[in-house]
Length: 499
Ligand code: ZN
Ligand code: MN
View 1 (cartoon, rainbow, N blue to C red):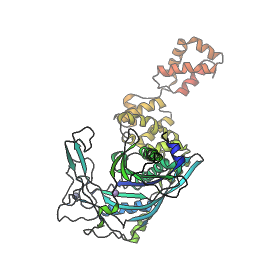
View 2: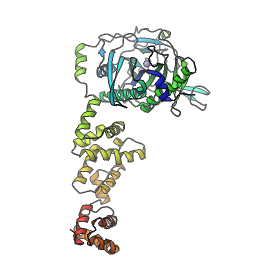
View 3: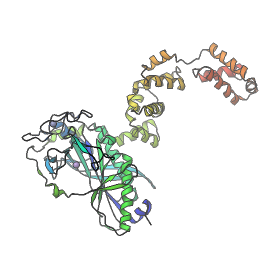
């Protein structure tokens, strides 16, 4: 009988290793001056250096070194006073030089850690993920396989190559072996990648969009019988491209490997590909060993030897750690953890903070961004922040607080701003959105509501105050939601002798 996840982790202890590739957001490539902008026509951002033409000589991008050092410092690494690039030799059509310029035995950052917190059966628990190295390298070009059903090379009629991405700076962050997580391995893996993404975003060194491939995670996983001190053979699941997929890939591999072991089969050391639809992995190539790449120091580049003073300046410039910031804001705003998480996942923490900074009350600021604005953004399949500014949201909230807008009118204002009708003020003027609080106008509507529902009015006169709700509702409806509801209630009750 096949083991499910719970049965698998009762018998086998998972060991993780995570490798994350991050595309840096430098203006030019790692070793040449070519632009890095996403989405340009194929092969328009290339030069003799990134095409590997004979005689072309690379020069290291200083900004990429700075970003790599910042990443290392934020991950509590030591920064090597001296590091070198190496050639990693292999043939692939999307890599015109026939080698990738990477770092091998002399990476720029070593020995760091990142603490992550996850929810366990016994409450929140912290795990330390140790970082082995952070090294610099370059991206490859992109192959496009044309014809065939799958978009993969098998069955394709021909392939096209775009070298615009070849030579874009990459940083690879490699953990040490992560053990002792037991059944929580999937959550620890996800929490690590999440925290790492948040740190990279706070450093502004990458746009860290997993779904677009600017941050990609390889998940190494092995199993050993619980209580044994050995390490099992690992598989490596490549290019997992969402946080949820990181978690699912670990679960999928635990189940697959445990069932092989149960059946007396061996685990093959290989790369595997994660399949979004099934949550399972399928076999790729069998894994090369490091020696197969014939690494050797890059003779065309000088070693990297950052001055100690520069490193200290960068250390002093590090922003507040995202986890620390989240805790601080959570306390300041008095928000439940779940809602905090929702803001982080929706990438709305910055704009909510800005909106509150402009004077908006925290609960309102949160609920406008997470509610109405997010809803409108989902409909249009764009980011909420592309639709409206924190200043405009703060302005709408101020108008609600001053009684100039009801919630319902405010929704119309936001809709107008999002629809390109102008600033909140302009939308209010154009659409004639004003709270009706003029006694005379309201009394006309109140008398009409009473005339339409004489029995209800009679009950209110007799002291049944909750019955007034139906009349207030009728007035709100008659005024198109523009009436000041509190005012309507006050006038109505007074008119019926209950005020
Ligand atoms: Zn170039
Ligand atoms: Mn790599």
